[in-house]
Length: 358
Image (cartoon, rainbow, N blue to C red; front, top):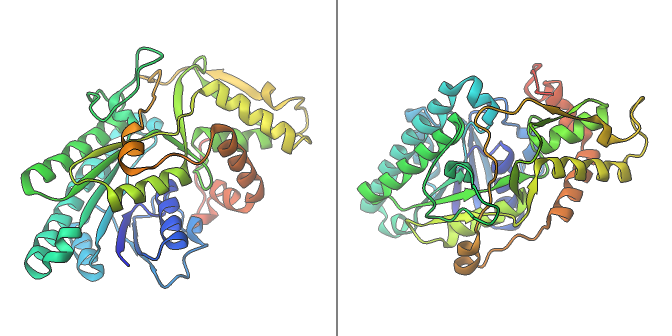
């Protein structure tokens, strides 16, 4: 049994990691989350009663809180997922992204380094097994010009948005702490995630919920931006495998082998809803009729695509879900869990109303 300290464990990907660890391993989890607008403890209702799960509400940028958390819980592995992650929000307000993703990561790295160096003196065996796993994004690479190129672990960084620039900065910091101080780090860069418990401002849940409400389905530009879609539970399993078996100092790209244009994703969702919810809102003949093309986002990357051959070759991970199976599961989950997303939309999951992007 090991103790995993998961930052951002109440977020979309973080909660999937926590659920996977508690439900399918014997490990303990310490979930550290500030509970910003995207942090939702209701996403962890299935595991919150476990005696192997502990929650700490804290900001990763709070040095004293991080020091105290490491001291109290003595983790074997840090999985750092806490981040501001919405591109549109980063364009409107970049400073918060720099504070959390760059400054917060620095504070966490220093807390981890101090803790690990203390272990080297007091418990060398535990120190030798300690890992700091930083979870990043394929957006740090910018975009791909051709239709056949793929992002590899050695692709040069060329971030396009304040969000991706802040994540690129945090990646560089993690590598620097490994090179300078010897901190045993790993980095993963993933493609676009989707699946259960996804915050409704993101493309896939936004399209599902808007369609159910008979609202417009806004698609940037011509909708031809291509993304590689990764089912979140596949990603969670990959992250735990990297944290447990990955080689210190290495980077692993994680993708779903599902390159799809945004407009294709939206039309797939509309088709799934036609099958599952044929009774539409008043005035809607077809869900697809709700698609509305809007002005493109500034600096919008055209194509992302991941080469995930390294993690497959070295660690034996491959995604279990296809695009079709994962999208079907996602639509079914939102249809079966209306209370979860309705509480997000009206803000009651935080005890207040929020201006959810619709």
